[in-house]
Amino acid sequence: MSGIFGDLIGGILKGMSGQQGQASGLPAILAQVLGNTDLGSVGGLLQQLQKSGLGPQVASWLGNGANLPVSVDQLRAALGDEHVRQLAASFGIPVDQLLAQLSQHLPAAVDHMSPNGTLEQQIGP
Image 1 (cartoon, one colour):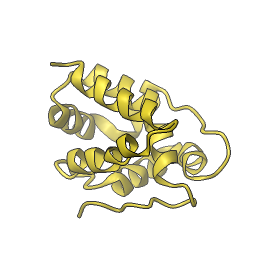
Image 2: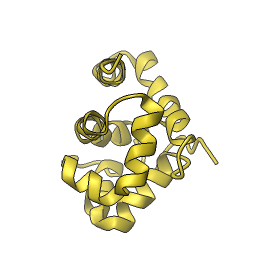
Image 3: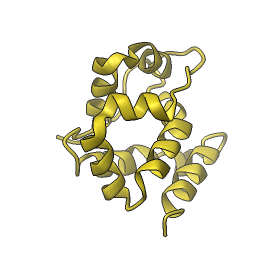
Image 4: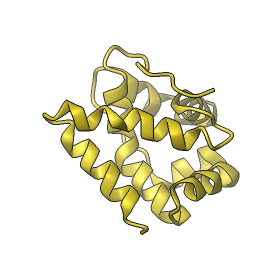
């Protein structure tokens, strides 16, 4: 069961290279899960990361250039234990696996959702 999130997100991100139908589900998945947390939406997640010192990374994901990486430790520090626990519980996976998946997939996911420099879908409260 714990591999479902990674397989799902990984499959969606791999589909971005040419199969737009698969990629279109990613914002909805993120929004649904984030809606169950205090962050509320993808925009809320990005705001939290920016407030916590990851502004250059977020700006690179939203912009047209190369995406700066984000480490597991950076995500853990930026989101805080409570948000990390909420997200892990929403996905039904361990915290360490959640952070690893976000570190690996979040930059490309945000980049895909913001082709013009802003999030195309502000789903959530």
